[in-house]
Amino acid sequence: MKTETNIHELAIRYFEGHISKAEEKLLFSYIEQAEENRLRFRQWEKEWKLTNEGDEQTMYEWQRLQRRLRTQEAIMPMLPRRYFSFWRRVAAVAAIVVLTAGATLGIWNIASLSSTEDYFVFEAPYGEKSKMTLADGTVVWLNAGSVLKYSDKFNERNRKVILSGEAYFEVTKKEKAKFTVQTCGYDVVVKGTKFDVSAYPEDSVVTTALMEGIVEIHRGEQRIEMVPGEFVKLDMATGKITRTRNDVKQWKAWSENRIEFEDITLKELVAKLSRQYDVNISLESEQVGAKRFRISLRNRETIGEVMAALQEIIPITVERRGKDIYIRE
Image (cartoon, rainbow, N blue to C red; front, top):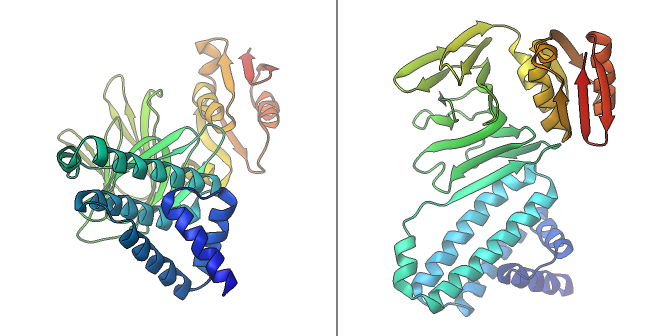
């Protein structure tokens, strides 16, 4: 009984946004132990809202925040714990902002915002990768330096996500709700499939590799239907789209902590390595960057080991100064 009382106190601090990281971990460990614990937690939430109820519009805004937290609960088990703690703190701050707005700006200003669309934003920093499960069951791996954004109406009105960077998707099939990935170059429209999309804003190309299922590339009025084993590349400078067949599994290797390319230029590779290892790799010239080769590394090599392997494959010289790496012939 004493334990339950302590957990109840943690829940109150959670609702108020005053919980520490260690306390938060303890609280959610309790919730995950049994369904009755989860139901008890929701009952405490209802009681807390009743005791702290303000005007109707303010409570509506609080409920919107809670819906966002419930979506967070569905996806955060797949992410590192630090992301969970960060999102909880952001939500707590947002709740405080809503209550303050209700007191200082008046209900009319809050009501004018109630119909707006909110967005979740998830990021994989340079040198890291993230994995998440969306509310519809779709699994997404985000590569280093990538950002995924989607509406709080996701899985209600639509299944659209906005990608800046690279992600590998395993999409849950829903007959009446297509899944769309919007990028800077084109949209990828699917029903249920496995594919990789790379659309970094600093890259000159946007690519899609299809492993399973069928997807459609939408660029303006242009429609390209892809089948498994196909690779589509858009040249952002010319607008030209090319479609080829090859071993597309290489394009998801990064999600399995592998580096594997059948045919890649050194310029293309160093852009990927710079993001993956959070380093700055500079090429002496366009000529050295144009060198093409095959590479396959499978053992979580360090950047130093990758550079040593490259020197075995192609005639280059590598100089490293901390996070700065220089490559020349």
